[in-house]
Image 1: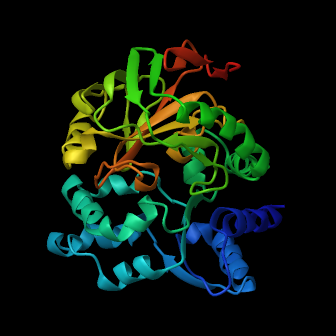
Image 2: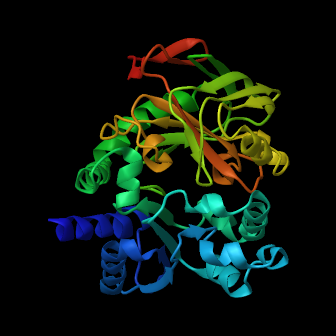
Length: 362
């Protein structure tokens, strides 16, 4: 059963998410616990006449570099990307990253200064990823660490993961497109919920539907709010946010003219403020996403899943997607999830389109 699901998972990633063609050079990055899926991916690429360029990270990738290396390398070396890696990222035809961690908090050992240097160094080489010029997909493989974070057995987590990923993505795309079109036709979105009242401009911006796209599981549509329009407060009181191997409970952000002017958190507030001060773009909204995956109904302590949860929204601080009209530039892109299923609503140009996580008829 596991082997057949891994084959189906790999086929989904190679064909629907990446659209691999003969002769493509595809970077396949992952860690040892993801070996069953990595082998299905490399075999699937071979059968399609494509090259599989395997990149193995023992401690998990940070900007596609091994964490163990990032912990030991001198700071000046972290600040200069490896020319061979830069060339690979700029010339490869596709990229797939399989997250299969032994410890989901391992990256917390990397000091903020070192993280900043590494992300800034590789950001130019990853521009093709952020602009969606390069076909890419990030996914997870079920490990005990991911299951433990979700409060589940490994077998139950595996069932959950495959259930959220192995879906009829054609039907999901059609359903989400109807909602995304309403956002594309709006001038402003207003998000109202617990200790939250936030407005974002949408005029002239398009929304991308993620249905077997750059994330797996898919199940969201997202866009880049107009720079300078974020105004109001958003409080992420329902679930702890996660970033860089850390948990942040009760994050509260207040925006004026598109910039975070006040921020607090019940835990790890100092690191939150350090992250917001990382560069000029870190205090701005790079993305607004709307979770729509009906297979994800509970908090997993796992942003890849949580941001797709039906009835939630998320904003990303930092870098925006230039192919969707965004212009914000930052070394970070941090998605933080807000639950709207109890007392929350979304308005478009003053009209409520979603109440308590349920869509209203147009």
